[in-house]
Image 1 (cartoon, rainbow, N blue to C red):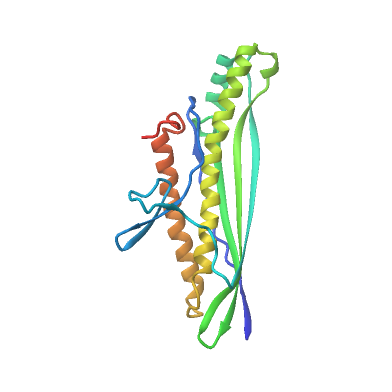
Image 2: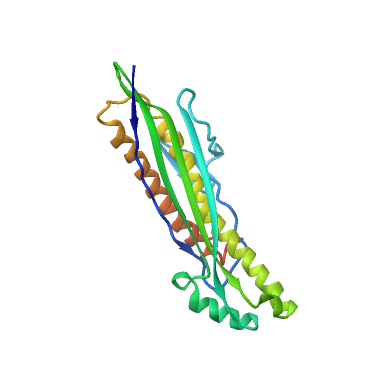
Length: 226
């Protein structure tokens, strides 16, 4: 058997923000729903009694690995009190938001060729996430009430951005499952099939992330989504 090594790097980056008011966010759960002859993935429970969270177990045989990394950066916010800090955040925040989350996914695989075609024999999916948060420089010299309000806001903002990062994590898990499930394919088509699966999931997760912000109003309605 001839071992063929194929390196393919595909990236998808998402920038998500939260307006200058906040609610209490929550992490998303992916559900695999059978609707007639179709199968769809959603962060909402399936509409029938058979809805179950997706089991993320890769098929036996090919080896898969996921590397997940999260980085946290801050930008400076200045002001002697909470009101001034909010004005500074409004002026200096990324794209008019208080914070953002970005994630990228790339993957590499090795394939093994046989008389019937080629199949992925090993796979590595890398997920790198980056969160940008405000850092109030004068926080410790502000009043106790302002410090308490700031910390509550910061916690809620961080949880909302974590929800976006979680979508990147879900993307990586699903990508691993889909690519390992390709089975034996025509050797000339394996790479394009892998990229097609990647793009299909990227489009799905992009829509989920937009829907996540729409339903929660960028975190304002996190406890009472639309």
